[in-house]
Length: 350
Image (cartoon, rainbow, N blue to C red):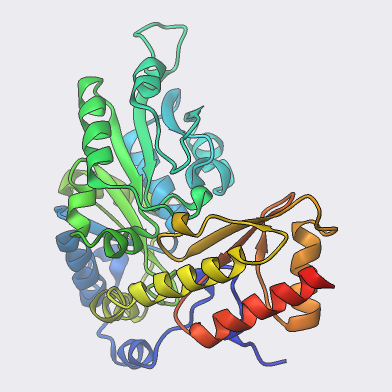
């Protein structure tokens, strides 16, 4: 069976590289990046850092590695990282900070948009006591995936940054979909990263590159991060072939993220009209649609997903219980969204 991206709403990670990316990859000038000699990788790192208002960047194979490299660069064994209990770094990255870094996660609840409460963060900072782990790091996320990709404003990060400085904490931002946030808020992405020490963003989600993320921060931080990348096995050689697609992604794919947001809003509005679906369309601000099946629906999320796949060839991401995630991305157009709504209506009315 031929793969059809227009019927895959599981994630924006399923995006395929554009023709321009494939051409750039074939023509890329390369060198040995572990020696710092790949000119295309260097250009990508410099451009990423420039766009986010940082001094330097580091190309890594994945967002999870970028986050882990940052955490290992900021904190050490026996240190503590404060983070949202439903953040990607805590839930979806295999416990890397604890498993490989000996860094103790201190989870805190988040509000409906994924924000930590400033008072709760302040209270979570440990006193200087030999019985306690050392509070070293504050982990933030934007957009916040577990809350449906809500874009968080610069003011929140200014508040968290000021709090962190008072307590001598470093701040790392998981900005996997940072450009979705910037497009949704119609702001410069650098305004969202001004008050954090490091940030990583994905090239391989909505920006459509085949692989890779970039970690950005100060030159001294990136110098240490390069060592941690090597430790994790992330040192690549002629990686300019991959970085070339990342440069195209930054040049050509950022502004078009607005299309994905429009399609997500269309999907949310249509699903919200169906009996059996619980969804507030106003909460859909980027390209992620979270919806629940109401108690009267005889299917759970997994069963609904199987019906969509078996009967209509559509794929979604059941998140457990009655919660389902659908994500719009490059390749999905308005007509594909309408097909999804029609299929959901048929399943719910059966």
